Image 1 (cartoon, rainbow, N blue to C red):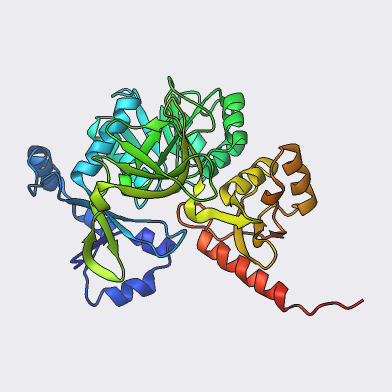
Image 2: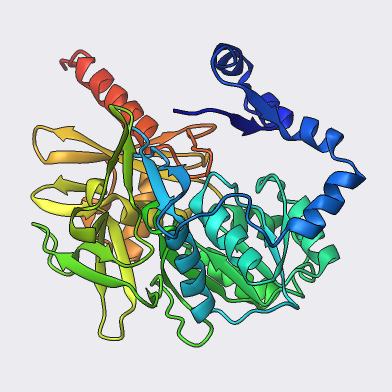
Length: 414
C-alpha cells in the first residue's frame, strides 16, 4: 500500500541500504530530500508563506498521522498506528506538566523513527511555538555539549546511555543554559543522576512511555520528582494492575487514555489494524504504584526469570551491573537450567569484569544471591538497536548458544 518513500541520500548511505533501495525502486518511487531542496526556489517559498495556514489536505482527529515501529528488542517489530489526536493529546499532556515557552530552545538529538524523538522532541515544541534544534546523531558525544553551549539551549531530551556519553565529554560549563533534562526509553542509573547533579548542578527528570501511547505515560517534574521512579501518570491517563504469579508487590500495567494508539499492524497480517481491546493497552511492564501515584518499574514481564522458584528481574540485575561498572554496557539473559529452572548469563563490555567482583558488590548491596549470574561474558561490543539500547533478542540467542556449547563439553573424569 506504500505509494512513495521519502528519504535522504545521507540516510541511505549511512544505513548501507543501497541494495534494499535498488530492489524497491522497481515498484515504489523514492523522493530524496536533498534533491527536493535543490529545486526549491523563491517562488516556492513565497507560495508557502502565503498559504501556510491553509492545510493541503483536510484531516480528522482520528485519521492516521504516523506509523512507528516498535524496537524489536523482544521479537518481531510491530507497526504502531498513531492518530493526530494521539500525538497532539500527548503533546498537551506533557505541556501540562512541564513549564516552557517561546524563550526556550529545545535541543533534540533523538531520531524521528523513535516516538520520544518524534512526539516529545519535535511535535511538542512545534505546536507550542518553541524553537527546536535537530541534530542528526546522538552519538557525537563531544559535539553535542559544545552545540548546547553555543546555542544556549534550555531543554534537552536523551536516554541514560547518551546522557552518560555527554557527561564524560562535556565541560562543567557546557550545560549552564539548560533548565530541563528529560530522560526516557531506559532507566536512569544513580551514577548518571549523581554526575549531572555534582558536575552540572542539574536534576534529570525521568519519564516513562511506550510507542503505543505516543509515547509519554508518566513524568517526574521539578515540583514532583522522586528518584527511582518514572513519575506520575500524565493527565487523562488511567492505569490498572493485574497480579503476576511470583511477584508480591505491584503487577502488570494496562493503560487507557486519549493518547493510546489506534492499533497494531503486523507483518503476518498486512494492512489490517488490530485495535487495543476495550481501549486498554498492555504495557508488558511490571510496575508498582505508591500512594502518591509515583510509578516504579520493576521490569518487563518477559524479562523475569524463575530461578530456584523465585522471580528475578533481569533489569534489576543489569542495574546492579550498571552501578558496579557505570562506564560499560551490560545485558543479562536467562537460559534453562536442569537444577534451578533457569540461570542467568551476563554479557558486558567491561574488559576487567569478573564474577567474583559482581558477587562482592551484590552482597554489599544486600541483593539476593539469585541475582548473581552463573556466567559473565566479556564482549568488545554488545549488539545494539538503533536507539542505543541492547538488542535483547540477539543477547538471548548468544546466551542460548553459550549454554548449549557448555552442555556439549565432555565431562572431565578425575
